[in-house]
Length: 287
Image (cartoon, rainbow, N blue to C red; front, side, top):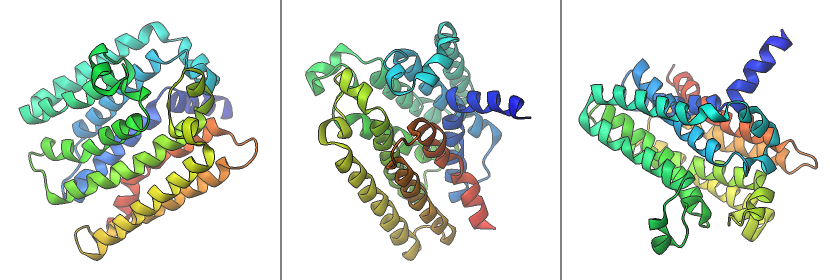
């Protein structure tokens, strides 16, 4: 049994499927917050666009990634030639499904693609504006861009249903805060590789202590934000279940602070796994 499950686990985690499932889970959460039934094509599109964006990043940074995560790099090297085709397939199918839904939804989905390209591939036109070719090369910009991209999920779900409700607008900042913790934590894991390639991140510029303190502050902000929304009846009571998530991230950061911590597992499985449980957690809260 172990011999069968381990390859599946590796493909889910190292292949990028866990993160894509997390995106679908946030889309699911957004739908139930607005009292809509999540449809299969909505969840499938969330998966496709996330997996496509992930694949762009991995195909462009596969050599740089070798320093931070050699296991994943070795795993993806075997399919490197197929990654561009996989990107085209994911986005092509995703946009085809979006076009069948409605035009505003289809048009808005161009934003995540543009962010992915500017983040991973870059453009010379960005240099006069922000001083770097790629968004990820600017201090704090990469964290903000990734978090903003994920915070668009509730808005995109609203456009899918052609109804952007106040609750979706309030949920978006919560998604942003939770992703800020994740991006900083990944920067901690990638510190050595980012330093070698001259990428300025919170850990490379200000050190690990400041980075862990910043994550704690953002965790507290997300907790206070959740409590305020639930207490003021701007969010349903079951949103209080989301208070478990800052505790979850605090726990994996505690493990990360230990000597010889397995940062690859903590990042790629535990930290990214947080988003997969959002949907089930909110569903449980509604029961």
